[in-house]
Image (cartoon, rainbow, N blue to C red; front, top):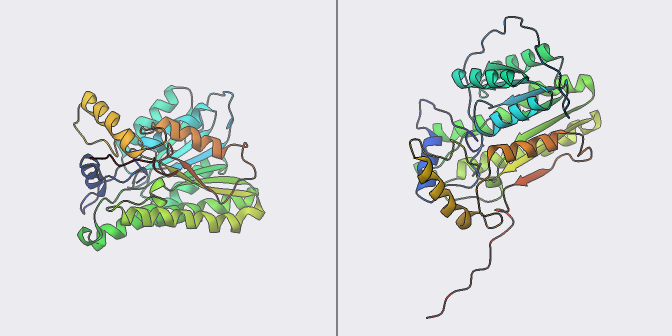
Length: 321
């Protein structure tokens, strides 16, 4: 299921798993909750620019927030929501044009944000990204490790390279982010990390072996890290979004009216609770809630925000002849 579109797309030299996932969705076999965003690239210089944040009231006033995979979808919505609540947001993504656009949108709205191009699969780029955000904004109070890609193929149809790319982006990318974020939080003896898993971690689909495996891995990383760093005042939780209405699941070129009709039919068939897809902004609200001081005793948890898709299935009675 999950990262999701901008729960978030990425393109690689190999077959594009996001595109494959989109086609599978149209064919009715899409995994629920494909969410996340794959990103990569070479970091661009900040030029020593100073923070231009315009003060505003909010839960995250003046806090340093780091977001991976924020050039679109859930990551983009979360970056904008954090900034709207006063945070200084440093975010990465592979697509520089979209990243700079999100940066402009946040600043034009009166917030403070810095985009840094980085590929979560590349350790040196992740380390540089984290270090630059911490240097610019005085540490890291909150991290939302969201970057991810889909992998909508049956196991025998997926190449080894495609499998490895999904694991490297979704699981290894989360590990790398935590690896370089934690030292800053240890120094401060506090911090909150939210990692995007997926409802797919709990509810697999025939073509989601790679994706589900990677998102299960995210849950495992979060559980272990929560135990390791809880005594130092650091909380880690996994977010499990359901299918989210983003470019990750919406095929390119489909007219708005056709997409609306498709979603209307798709919801009751796939989400037995709320019978609809999520909006990226709804998932972002959950991220901010988990990152806030409202859940001081929650750590190592996997929180499903999936409209009830993993709660179970409705009882359907067979019709008689």
